[in-house]
Image (tube, rainbow, N blue to C red; front, top):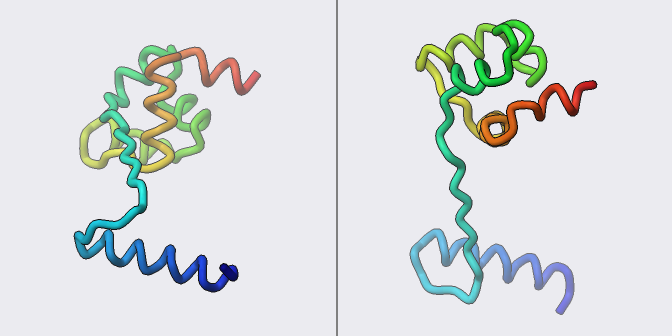
Length: 95
């Protein structure tokens, strides 16, 4: 099978899956837990400014998360879930 044929097969399987048809493709679902940003930050002992800098977001973004106006998604949600499990992670990695 050529690279083109392999890619086309994968695309067709993806379309079939999106349309609800059975395919031979395996589907992996990853559940990322919701996070309590204020509690996570508090567990690190960092101020809002320091915590925001340490995870690479604007302080305003962190404030929006902590006040529930917005919710972290994607990589930020995963990073926060990791910090929730090991609060010392930020300080260990940034030393």
